Length: 286
Image (cartoon, rainbow, N blue to C red; front, side, top):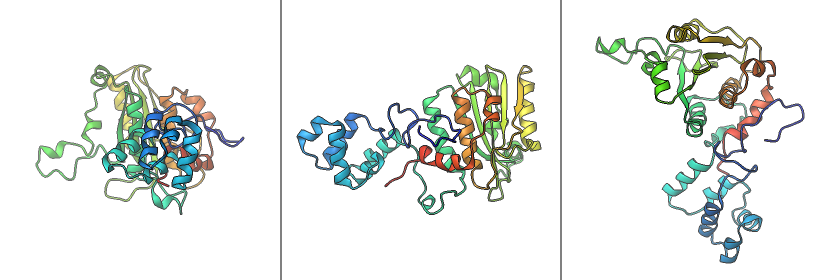
């Protein structure tokens, strides 16, 4: 992953490619898929057989676009097959409005779609979603008196660390919004739990203390595992208003890749790094 000299970003994979893909920037598609794309675009058979740079140059001229994602979008493939290729080999689609506003706030789906791909790459990882701050409050949509005892995000409230370990889920990711479920959303924060290491990490890109709801939830983990240690980020990463969601994504990715939490907090990337990171964690249609 190439960055400017002053960038403090660490590797997050190949630009715009699904995180399972290994190789060079821009090479998301394996040769067999690339040949299928070229066939649907009408490439001469001799070029398709050659493959490589020669074939890619032909596809670029044919489609008038440079990215592999754009090549796939330009084909006349069956829609279901095209969707399968896009889902399997590329990052989630970058929202169209980001072209005009490159620092648009991330919504719940923007966050979830990225992290769910990491669940595919790391089978030991489970993501519990991007949730409002009142995730543990009684569910307002349940009318029955017994159902009302269920919290808004029952999967989190009933989380059992031993059961998760037995299922092979040892790394847990959470993203929260400081707004409750009846509001539009404000600031994203995150936590990450490493069960075998007996560690839970809280991250706020502004460096603020954990709100009571999150602090209470993290303390509840120590009741299940008395050896669990809680660590909190007190260093400010973010100085603008738009990149909290991107910082949360970067935090969870780096924890999955095994970064030391304290070292991670001592070396914060900039807001502009996070804006640039959007081009790696999302793919453009054209």
